[in-house]
Length: 293
Image 1: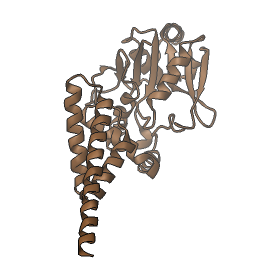
Image 2: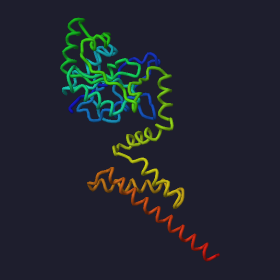
Image 3: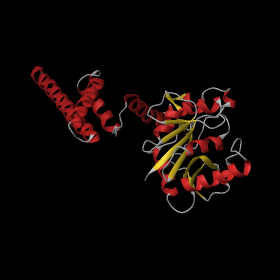
Image 4: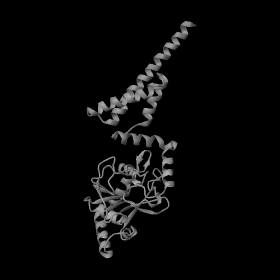
C-alpha cells in the first residue's frame, strides 16, 4: 500500500512551557523518533516543524506563518506529498505502533475519505488518522477560499466535512492515542515503559534503533540461551555468549541468510553447546563422587 506520512511537529507546547516537545525523550528516544518508527514504510515522510536531528531521513517544511495552527501545518505538509493515502500524525505519540498505523491505512483504503483512531474514551483523534489525499486537498482548498487562509482554523472545520471510518484502539495497544501535552503526561509515559511487562520490548526496540538495525528478535530463545550459559558454564558466559551469537548471525546475514533465522540457528547451536558443556561437567562430578565413595 503506497502512502505518505505528514507529522506535525511545530506546535507551541504551551502547557510544557514552550519547550521543543518533539525532542523530549521517552525511553531515551525522542518523541518524534518514536512516531517515525511507527511508519517506516511511508514513501515520503514530511515533518512540519523546525529542523532537528532524526533517526531516519525526512522532508522538512513549515506552515506560513509559523505557528499558524494544526490545519495550516497540515496544509503545508500535504503540499509535499503525492501518494493517494496520507497518514497524519502528531509528533508526541510515545506508544503509537506499526500495527495501529497499518489498521488505519487498511481502513482508509476502503470507501469514504479515510480512517481516524478512536481513543478509549470514544473520541476521534484527527491527528492519528489516514486520509485520502484527494479528499484532504479538496476540503483544505475550500476552507482556504472561504476563510482567506488556514491560519488558526480548528481541525474540526476539516474533519466535519469528511466521511471517516473510526478505528478503535485494540487491547494490545490501548495507549496508541496517548499524547504528551503536559509534564504529567510525559512522566506517565516514562513510567509506563519501565513497567515489568513493557521494559524488555521497549529496551530491545531502543537498542535496535540506536544501532540502526531492524531484525526480529526471539527474546525467549535468547534469554533461555543466556540462562543455559550462565548455569551450565559460568555467570559471565551469558552476555559473552549472546554477543557471539549476534556476531555469528550478522556474518550469516551478510552472506544472504535471513537475519531472524540466522539468530535462531546461532542461538540453537550455542544452547546445545552449553547443555553439552553442563552435561559433561555433571558426568565428571558424578564420576568423581563414585570414585571417592
